[in-house]
Length: 324
Ligand code: SF4
Ligand code: SF4
Image 1 (cartoon, protein in one colour):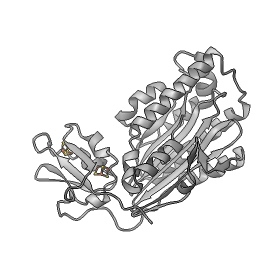
Image 2 (image 1 turned 120 degrees about the vertical axis):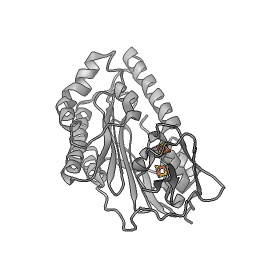
Image 3 (image 1 turned 45 degrees about the vertical axis):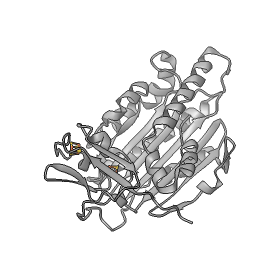
Image 4 (image 1 turned 180 degrees about the vertical axis):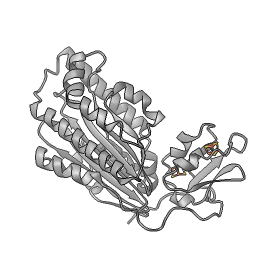
């Protein structure tokens, strides 16, 4: 039986709120309005609990959480369109290339966890999947898609090297609403590229520098302040929000993803195992552990997943689709 989404409670501090509208602009579901100088939620049922409004608020005036209280609606009609959004789904193209190049095999158990029920997930107002694969030289390949109310879609994909390989971790996140896309595409370095210049040159600068110059300057791609710390660690990460019009910019983003993926596969083909006891690999192992723990504790998407499919399943989805 499909799990029912829990109720959302939105609280706006009337003293702190200046009515600037930054929260409404950031909301992918278009359910926040500024009325009489204050932000208000119009349709709490459509809230993804994604936290975008909270992060966008310069005043720390808005809070959104699952609760047992009354609906947060203010009785105004939501602006969210009823017609299903047509999503770009770059994930399908990425999976086709990965299937051809890496010959992955899907697994239904990961780290002792049964994940067979995540192959297809149906919930009230949400559908999706989280799938894991093995392949030569990989700890795992993962892909996941969740669609909420047919208005918002979140695609993630990752290629995580086996422990004895020091390759970067390839990942992308493509979160699409009716009018905009939040995007991350990354080669996350498993060694500190500031400390190890050879690593920087071999795994980042040489395969990516030209691609990065093209991709990071796509018109309309606005950087997200939240990601500035991670970009210090991963100098070739492309990230930002972009409007879906004009469409040619989305096409460029699509092509950037494919270019990065092919660059990573080029490195994967040449990769050879390293000595896990070496100082270099000890640093790699430790950095990967820290990265995984940070992700487990801070992934901003987990609130949304938990709201729709429940915490137990949401916890397994997160463990399956984190880079580590
Ligand atoms: S949590 Fe997300 S969906 Fe809900 S109001 Fe805030 S931005 Fe909109
Ligand atoms: S971003 Fe913050 S201060 Fe601005 S309208 Fe929204 S809640 Fe109010």
